[in-house]
Length: 592
Image 1 (tube, one colour):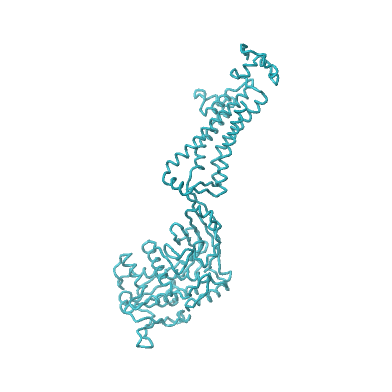
Image 2 (cartoon, rainbow, N blue to C red):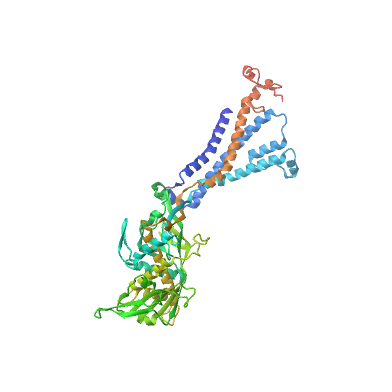
């Protein structure tokens, strides 16, 4: 008997411990990834895997039920020995727990309300519920799956909303060099400050992506060769929206703006990660630009100083006190003489012209473009700052910048500073100029391509105003790109004041490949099996203690009772049975 009791006790202790040990190991290692061979079989045979795991859990439950029945039976026998009277409800509950069956008669339901019957019945219901939850609980920790974790990201970025005098002065000084096309050192690479040189295709692609996203609801994938990510050109789905993508896979020259998580620097963890993504709450632009055909334009074409050279030049003639481009010292633009010329200039808007527009941007088609484009005047309303959610996905290797549907932490009522808007419009005019070639203007051809090839418009004409939104969105896309470029140049400048930066927060989410995962919240699935084991251990321990106090069971089938029945009658045995071993014969009768 003692050997059997000890075996039951040790088995119950093992069955109590191993689920928690498994959970603790998986939790401590933050998940255990299956090797490629096992993961392949799991992915190819999910139903078989589920069958095997459920079979293991069901087998564990069957063994646990058998041990529980043995433990409560041993406890009940030892308890009966010391009791002269046993409640029928108690005995019925013991039998119900032993067999995991409903032992009460429906015709005698009234007994549940007598002699603590409802109390015993509640114990049985709760125990059966725990037994019922054993299989799903064990299945949940044994079944391999893909699981996701998350970590917080923190960092800094250039703040375009700062109104600090030191920051405003620094911005004015830092952005003046963007049009000089000189070289500025930046470890580990060298970059050019000239906005429309070396990155013209990136700029036009960004403007095209903005137009497609707003007019056709299609997102175009961009590969921006100027903005270098950790693994090559920065790839983005859709327009930039004035955001400079940061983070572990963002632009490497300014990657120190975001504290890299230890997870992505740990080879042991990275080996278990199948995919990851992260989202940052960043500051971008909200641009409102409208274009319309106009009969007049402030742009003036003139001949080159040397008539033998096939070039021409143009400049702007804005109303008094509105020509900020001349105030910045922008010289007349010189272009090759072409039958397809497009010129651009920008002026501050006057109150007499518009109360809502801050600036006017002018496009003028020359020669063949005079018929297809003509004079276009675009009014730019207040450019405001807005919160965007920048997301990177390792599966696609793409960034995406989407509107933040939550409350705007950047206060969208704060407009962009006039200095930055004027710098952007000057750069925009420079892009139009840089797009001009001997045969055509690339910006105009991009707009025609979007209209004809994507939006299925007829060829452009001044009598067909559908192209006006195309130009408005493409020009807005260039302004967004310039804002991102300004952030880039400002972020790599070492003397940037602290008042020009703001905090950036986000979340890194990564998926562990097929394996086993234990979340802190998932500890509750082990509670039912733990309760059953603890109850069974308590029953068997109580039985062992009572058996030690009484060396044998008082029942007709007990060998000790048959051997020493004469000593049992009216006498509680202590150790005297050992000295009276041969006093009883097998022919003696037992008297109860």
